[in-house]
Image (cartoon, rainbow, N blue to C red):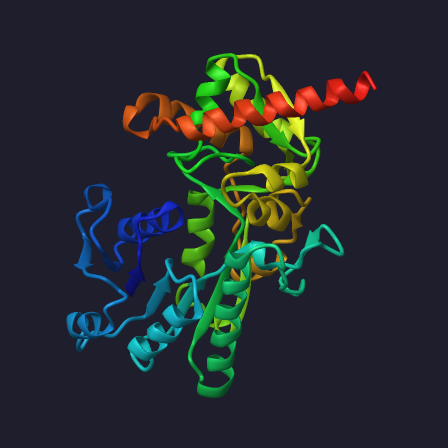
Length: 339
């Protein structure tokens, strides 16, 4: 098959790109050339800015595809551009949406693809919903061959899954644990969460390419395993051989005092217990099951990060914020105890 990816080197898309290339498919990427050195030799990179529509039209002139995958489309205008560029030129257009688009607050923690899409807490999620609605309209009215994929919390070897972290990813939290410092866990740490390794998601995604049962459909792709946030952080600490000094702080409090957007990522996503029903993707891709267990994936990721200093990006601003929030929260608790 001939596949074009817009992006193709991110957390989710890199695993898909590598899998398709290893299977001998013709894979082209449109991006600015980031992480190109990690790509298999048989992947062709069309270096350019997808937002420069005229340039991309010229660079892809005369090319047709079995599938076009969009990994970096976040707002409706970007998706409208894709429809203009690829209508009549692809047999399938696969859009990466987000499981955070599902209804918040949840009426049930058990999520199927028919769970309503509504998230008043996170603009990112509302934009994804708008993209989905536009694509479904294009499918219904013009026959544009869309497939929608909703990942949940997907990770790779470069960053461990966390509830609260700064702009530089997970390293600063790992470092705090290594240094014996307390770390913030939102809520009481007992809500259930689903983390999915990117290689597992890639297996299901690739099974949707060229799949007649996927056209006009939406699928979420996640692990079947649910773990608590306390378990996630404890796995990290155990892998490091350190004691976990957890400070549980209500999500609403963290969102109110954060210097960055925690309302969306916590109240609109990670603070909610979610359990995904993957029956639909398993029907479409028989034999699919997520194989990377949470403890195995986290251990492998930490070992990789410790072996790659370039991934150890300090975040002093986030570190100081953690210290301030923990100090104020503990002080408030002490004041309340003492009347």
